[in-house]
Amino acid sequence: MNINIPQLLAQGEGISIEFKRAQEKLPDTLFETICAFLNRNGGVVLLGVSDDKKVQGVNPEAVDRLIKELTSLSNNPQKLCPSFLLQATKVEYKKRTLIHVFVPASSQLHKCKGKVFDRSADGDFELKTDEQIKNLYLRKNALYSENTIYPYLFETDFAPGIVERTRRLIKINRPDHPWNELTDKEFFVASGLYRRDPTTGSEGFTLAALLLFGKDEMIQSAIPYYKIDALLRRVDLDRYDDRENIRCNLIEAYDKLMAFIVKHLPDKFYLEGDQRISLRDKIFREIIANMLIHREYMNAYPSSLIIYNDRVEAKNANKPRMYGQLFPDSFEPFPKNPHLAQIFTQIGRSEELGTGLRNVYKYSKEYSGSDDIQFLEEDIFVTRIPLTPNVPLNVPLNVPLNVPLNERQKKIIQLLVSENSTISEITLEELANKLEVSLKTVKRDMEDLRINNLIERVGSRKTGYWKIRKDR
Image (tube, rainbow, N blue to C red; front, side, top):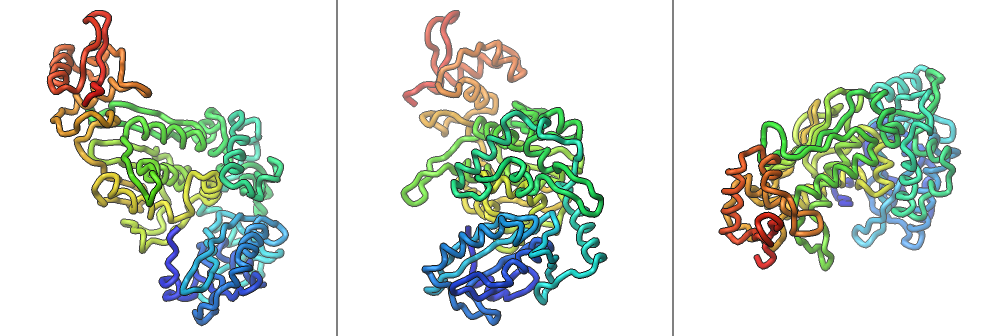
């Protein structure tokens, strides 16, 4: 995570930034501030800095203990109710050690030791009247649809094994996670997926739980317009060359969308230091996670992920906090569905809020040669990621890319490449049907590919097959 300490110090304390001394122990008022940030718009607590911006630091020998203590207390309903798991980061600045605590806005109302705190530019303040607390509840319920309670939604309505799988992913990603020791019921409550609304008395699993774990038919029953379209539009721009219509829960939807990306987009050899990383995964895991966890699910507008020749475009319904282009150095991260975001972060499928957008900007130019990236915050959130144009998709590395190919020929090469081999038994008639062209056209394209030494025929005309040449 990129933490800009000079920028935080220059901004000073305000509605979303708080400095606190913490040389040997956590400040007594720390969780009052955390509670206030959760109840308002989120913010950053910087431990080791005084109110007048003097960097005093935290005792380096105490840092790990304090971070562990903060994580434990954030999961303790006696301290923070409902609990909200937080992660702190150790930061070195001018030979001093600081602790950076990012607190997202929460979709629930939180209490610290039984008291409700809110945030203003002047700091934390306690809400003491029933009217103040009721107004905060109403604001939260109007802003966050993920908290919608379904009293007649039960664990039997969840996809078989999906909760166990999710909890296993959390344990793999964070073996010391405090949720690992909880029962399933305790896990649902701690993660905000099961709640009681004190204004109505309604109690049960939430929309967030349904979206994360629900069976397909249960999700469609509650949200009949829910779907995600993954489309490939390289040859047929009016319809599609390939399509995945996704109506399952978000855990499985993430897997299907990533599989669609892997199927249709190439990866690129890239070293970060001395370690090879997948640029494709770095970029598109963030795009897909953002699609899923920041969508406004009460809006009937369907989500879509479309791969074109020169770009990937994602769209989803949104509740904008601002309008226009988002840039990594100037936007303030704000979760549209905090509980969905928290689960995806804990299972390792998304970065801490705000980091994902920065990663996309960081790696996109290396991937495509262009940094013409768009994150447009509107009523429909639009993301556009550039691609290197006119490059065949998922062709073997030994196929020369300087041979001029038309869009059909690129599609033919893609269809000839099976998942684990350069060999395919697809017939010319099947190619013609898939491309929606005549057999004569396919034969002409195949002959051009053969002349350019991109493909070769193995065996006889009746019993043989076409394959990509390995010597190219």
